[in-house]
Length: 155
Image 1 (cartoon, rainbow, N blue to C red):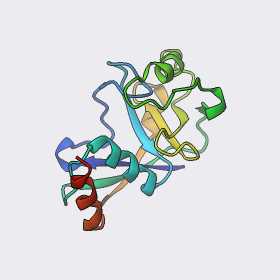
Image 2: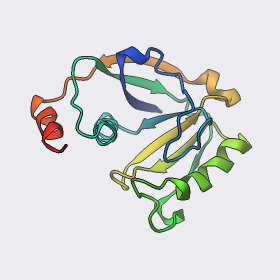
Image 3: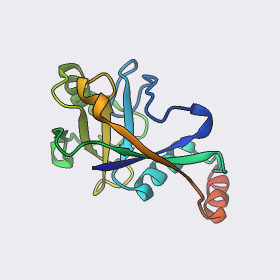
Image 4: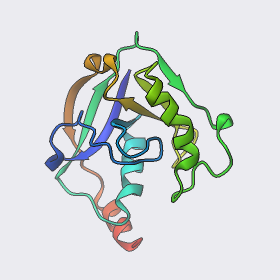
């Protein structure tokens, strides 16, 4: 399976996870957030950027998770009301942190808070199977300039 990540060139290694807290991980848990498609990865990145535009310094990482590696899944029906709250990640972390700590699977398939009919993948970079994850390529991100203008107006 191929998953996608939008990142700034200055952050170097697209497979590096600094352990910053996110919706599906508490601080210190080293995970990569990826999306099932480039458009979803782009939408997720737009939301996180909060009005700061894109430029030629952004790129798309194409990452392969071997099909033979099992993936754990959390579905929308498994989530408490308010799981997609923009300011409180605790409901998602309560489900994902035990997955991370148990280490039973490399990746966790989760609904996107931005568009819950789509999926993101949280990859545990400390899992033994992480060595099987491959960066296939990096491609430039060249969004329509009108998107940048919309982001700037949204501030």
